[in-house]
Structures are given as C-alpha cells and as structure tokens.
Image: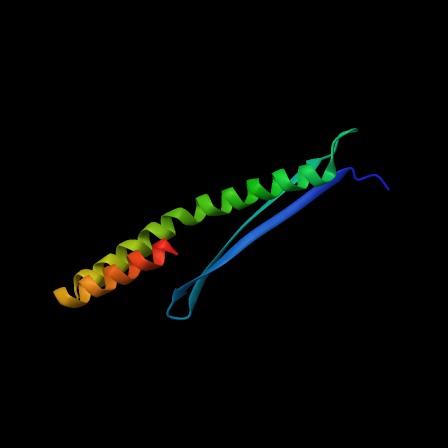
Length: 93
C-alpha cells in the first residue's frame, strides 16, 4: 500500500469556568510525493497544527493570566506573598 495523502486534525478544549469552554481546532492536509516518508510528513504536520492551535489560544491565556493577577492583587499582602511563592514553586517543577 502506498500512502498518497495525509490529513491531520488537532484541537484543544479549554475550560473557562462558569460552565463555559472554548474549543480550538486546526486541520491540515498534505499530498505525499514519491520518495517522501509518510511518518516524517505526519510528524511535521502534527507540529504545525499544534503550533497553530497554541497561537490561537495565546490571547486567551494572556487574558486568563491578567484575571489571575487581578485576583491575587486583591488579596491581603501575606496571602499575596504565599500565592506568589506557591506559583513560583510550581514553575520550577
């Protein structure tokens, strides 16, 4: 059997809270030329659709981070310090 075309779809669903979510998907297709390695082509396509989905989700991630920072800044100073220390510890893992 000879593979002549590869189609790949990748998506992510992000919970927004309050029973809301957003789903971002990307689909890509490529024709395989004689002598091309289908496994290598699939890997390239997979990386490309993942990058596209990540790029589409970036504004949402920035917005969520702004919301988190707003919540943290409304906490008393001792709790702010504890939350920030905990977040920094999580980043190191």
